Image (cartoon, rainbow, N blue to C red; front, side, top):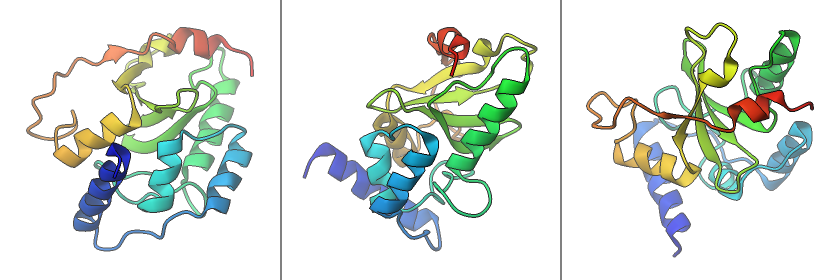
Length: 181
């Protein structure tokens, strides 16, 4: 078993314990359809997570969005945020950054799908007036590291976490928000 196989097993175990009933997994076809609608590929671990654990409905706090379907999904929220971002004078949501979890109060966990490891970002817009690059932080360098913190109960969102409050800013935010797409 590889490290990723072990991680997915531990994620499934925690998700099964935390949730009374997990949603069904996403199929290969559903993942491909989501990628087609988004117009970009998903990092390999993220696709496996949805195909092998569940189509959202588990994870930290408010849980991961499903990929597709009724209501709020990763795909629908991505398109909503990109459309709303394009209406303002300055864009606030970069291309190929997929919202994966709503923290509430306008905050999201999002994944940079341009990185094979799936860098996890925190979008924290509260108190930001128009320098939207200041709303983006690196939560974790990779999806696998982010999942490890959830499985081990050490994420910043945990009540008794010993993690420092200070996340570093996402240095690529200014450049990515300035891109024309």
